[in-house]
Image 1: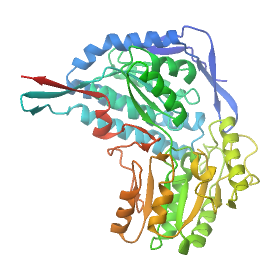
Image 2: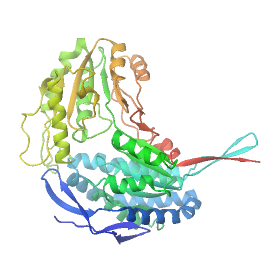
Image 3: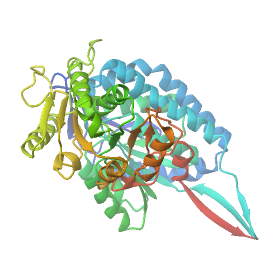
Image 4: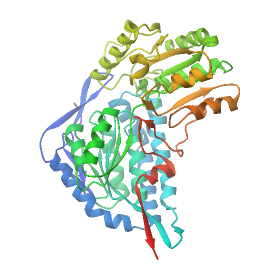
Length: 472
């Protein structure tokens, strides 16, 4: 262990936790404990919420240009820490350093820059008959974030909440809390007013539930599993509080018969294995027209075998470990069950070589997966791709929609109009056509059990605003 934190950031300063209990933070590539952080309690949450409540009126009344200036200073302070952020994420999560720099660090900075601009341009008031319709900040926000994108998922909540005029209590994942300490060092340097942003580390059952059930938290914004999201929703519903939930996914990558199969498979495998498959939007089901199925399987196996597992800090590593031993065992269980249910192993699998140390799972491709099987229905959250043959466009849409999730997806076709027709029929919050790039200004969120509400851009800002009609 080389880092021991005993403090939270409350009311504009670093303060000791109420209790002495701590939580270990592991390096998943070495299995070593590299840090400890406080195991927060409900009493710590009470202090944080009280600070946020006391700061709310002043922050809500702050001029939009001034709020934008605060966010701009935060952007500068985080940019100066970019190398430290990337290295910290590589260490506590295992993301290869190049990917940590580009995605885990670069994406949240891009999101924050967008909200600097949006904060300076608040939603315009509207006149409807004799009513003046205005938008106002919702109040105190409880933000509960996951471990797989530990800065981006925070920034997708923090930046719009602050731009809207809300104050925030943040609980990061106990598996990857260290990058949040870098964030709050930057927040302190940027000079945000005391109480506007507060940090409490700890477990979900203690700190997360205390935030979700707290009577002075006006909105709970949660990203994580669907099961935990349901629990958060119940706690908030007991006191009629708003929730924004970004939950699980089991996204389909639809490859039609006229598609550029070489590109579609290469990009599709890369998407499925991004961040070692620990991505809620990962295209973990590859649906391929039967006429191109064998070709796609050959390409997918070759692509998977090219992923080098190893030290996240090594320049040639393409796939890091999973975040924890428990996650590794969970993914291994999904692979074993997928094969027992009739899937055919074409790459990776339980006997494929992995490093001796670290919580690694080999990149795995399983063919002939039954669309109703557990491997096609459950979120694996590891480098495991299920490949399913389809007969035509209608069949592809039916299989893609055969899921309780609806977060993301993709369609590939030489005919863009055809691809768009399929995309419109997919019951999911986002669809990429022919590998179109991710847009951090577009709405992000899901249908069905993938969540409630949207993040990013103007749509994310709307989640943190109330609507008021003033008759005159």
